[in-house]
Image (cartoon, rainbow, N blue to C red; front, top):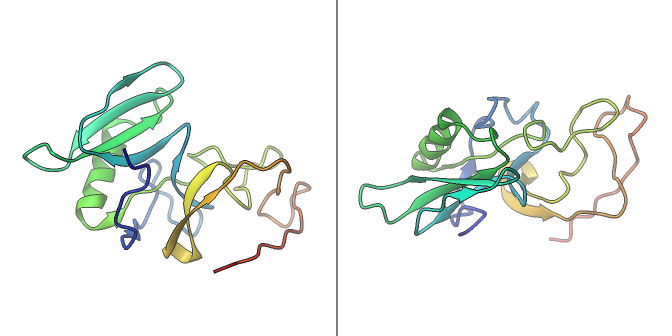
Length: 157
């Protein structure tokens, strides 16, 4: 199973497939995490336990390609899964926001600077990159929050 959809040329969807927030207020456009995400598979995947459940929806009539969803119970529902499939079939990449992906500040509730442990769109949706789990909290993205830190991010591309 590919945690990121294989065609990286797909532009991100206009909004979070879970809650509908637009990218301008969503914090980060997250594609996948260990705990929750969306991907593709040649076979349906289902099952799991309380901590992580898997569900699949076919992308074609021959049932040779499936969109796979994983997350804690209740993270994906039938509406959000169907919306993700529709987004993909319109040549867009489904994503979920920092709020839905639980990558928010523990002080003020706003999105973190980087969605740690996540694959996400950066550069306004041009690339999918991975933000590792870091030993140090990079802090909140809002200047008014006491958790805000001054961080210099270096683009090495």
